Length: 313
Image (cartoon, rainbow, N blue to C red):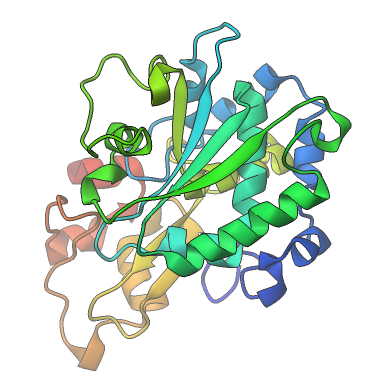
């Protein structure tokens, strides 16, 4: 724990060299990929499911359960990383991609191996030019080192990864809208069912996960389901990166265990309201989220259940 935070995924984000392959490997990079490639794919899926890891893009659906919806056949399937991050006031995925691109790549490779995907795309917000450049450099490094391409680490597993830049459309943050855009169509949501796991990109089975979700997969493999569950609550396991913005003294990204008190995020980590003014309201999520009153903030904790149903806090 540093300065009130629990730096789990973000442990090495303060090191400039962590975004390079050499710096990443110096701090344990790609060790978990090697471990995962020696596991059975179903064992990885089960570990992720048992860890309680839920989607970090907002919906909070069980990651392992989502992977389990894929058809049990040899049909080609795709892994898509949703890095569109179009919600106002949200910038944690951008930080992750710029400070730890190989962390995302390793998490994606482990995930791709688990679901038997030979091709993945990172769909990134068009305005994130620096993030795109950083990721592209990291992907090139990974190819040269043999972490991408044919016969990865001598395992017989092949995987290719590419980047697709969006064009600033907010709706493409929704998974089927993103798939439409990736297919070269108008970026608008598709009717469900069929769900992407059954019929997604190019009408093939597809898994869509957020940047933070995929990066966290590495730590589930490193620490196991029980180790990952040491943080968070029973139903909201692990840590979470939160973007704090607005009229606070110390805006920024903070990593804390799920279940962390919202008022502590504002007053302890965020340094309180600017100029000593009183808190009036908080928008806890995206532009469609309801505004929280001061009384609600007092009892709110940062986990999926509490924010969905404040009366149960």
